[in-house]
Length: 407
Ligand SMILES: Cc1ncc(COP(=O)(O)O)c(C=O)c1O
Image (tube, rainbow, N blue to C red; front, side, top):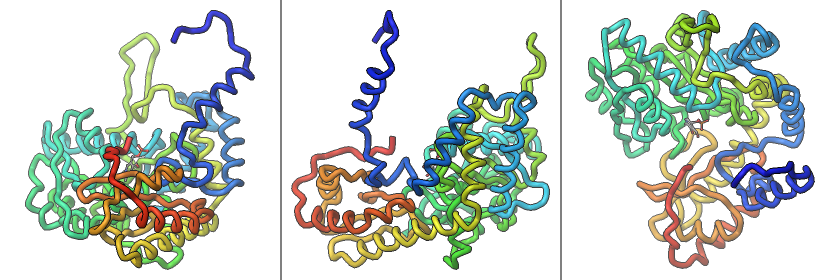
């Protein structure tokens, strides 16, 4: 396509956009189970207003835009409070879970070099860890080694103890992991890391804005945050269960002094000192304002209520699946993320039928499964979903061979 010679009238443009958008996954009717985290109509309105206020500002320069600096500081501090960050902890916002993970890995790499003389080295992550760790290792010139999973789909801590080495730069556990929604044995893994002076990252990109509020509701949650002594860094995504629009995550360090390994400072050019906390240079301002706004708008009560609604909906689906003679859930999901499979029917063929009925479940391999991340908004479609799921199991044909893909 070439740039049009003459500008296109805006009505025509927006008609084209709407037409193209009609082919996208139908998340607005709550028929999509990953990528989007529908909360409430009120949250939606608040987010529109917050985003609109900061479409043009640039968070690269906190001195020019002190409002952004203060909002970012407060988002980081509220998140650290939720995750029991001790006195002296600190962090920054980033564009998302992946960027938070890359920055935590970078800090671990510089620490390993400074404190233990490690050059090169590798990260040691559960088999179920998000691909962001492989990406981080790739970008940062590190290797990656995998901790096998136990039968419960959690990282096998005994195996990790045998795999950790002098050039392990960082160990990782997920709370919960994306594929099966289970929480790795963070306390055991972090203890192994701490005994050798190795950084340990809890990936709570999914759980950071969910698990603290489920705990408030009395749900039993395995230790995962800074209350575990060996945890040195964490990631928590406001744009997941914080219900913010995309582009908002928080990376936290137990010791805020570690930020010196994260921030890039440079002055060897005519423009003077350039300082940047993460990968992006120019940083969108809208996600910072949106994160600050939604966190203050909901407050602890609002998050507890929404986490409860998502959890109850997820439990209703999990219980239905477990009671179904042909289906079962893999492992014991800790919160609202789970994968379900079957020994008697081909779940890929079942999903073909669900696809045709307008649902959007992701497909997974080893073991074959359909994957769901449940949000508060999914409470609205619970009955329709369960009815269609039962129908699909009873009426599916041969699998069309649709590939499992996450993105
Ligand atoms: C457990 C976990 N960690 C990290 C990420 C990466 O987050 P993002 O897609 O925001 O980069 C995800 C994304 O779903 C995730 O589920």
